[in-house]
Image 1 (tube, rainbow, N blue to C red):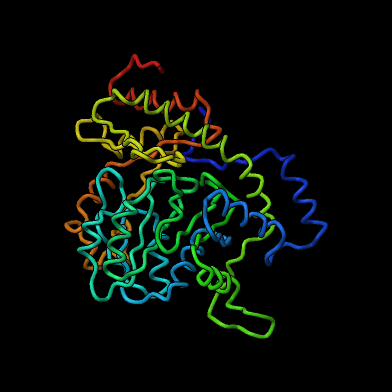
Image 2: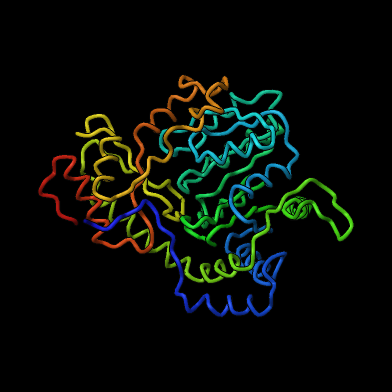
Length: 377
């Protein structure tokens, strides 16, 4: 039986590079609560991401939850149905009402025109997602947020290191929340961060991630335990030393797929947008009508061969039981997102994916398309 290939896989640095950090942590007995390595990682990440402030947290969901809480939102938040469910769950945890707006067919991100039409007097914010690491239309959304006097937050879980026109996408909006989950481009086993641009918000985020504790005898707000530990921070420091080579490896796989899938009829490999420096976080394809197998048929065939691709994002968040009764959750309102959700498939891509494994993936897709004589280019 062939080895299993997953859509993504944690990349880890050489063990000998992390061991000195672990020994120092062990000897110091400082395991959490704003330790040495957490502070060092925050400083280094702020430099890498071109950000004024980076607050580290214990996972990406808590990062987004605290980002939203720090802004004191109420009422409705316009967001996308085409994302991981945590995006909308964070709104519900804060008793905010999600209002779904449709996406653009090529970027898979919020359609600014649909966002503007969805804003009402109850709207307090827009929550965008840089889907697959592809930047939202940050200029158009910023203009809408300013004109409508609402906050603009980005779920940037996929977008670590991405630049648009030479500028970090983390600089867009009021706040950006990032995930450092094990399967992300940059990981700390588990972890996350909030990128902020002013001192007041930065201080509030740091208060909220530590139960709202201001000092030894004062609790100033209702916070929670969102702190990253020293072990995860140490891994992040080592990972950051290798992030460049990890992205280069991802780019090579991206190039291979594009070159070898380009001429397969009724299969679309969406290009990266112009003026974007990608992180190659995901490799989505669209299985169009006319391909010999349906999207689900191709998914099942690859799975049968131990290639565990993912239908990111299917079903839509708006189709889950806790959201499907919302007025904005109808398929008529989300026609583009509904169509993309039924055609999308994300192929395996991670730094240590081998050429032989990538060839297996493409070979099965080519065979499914009737190209029995396929050879890699």
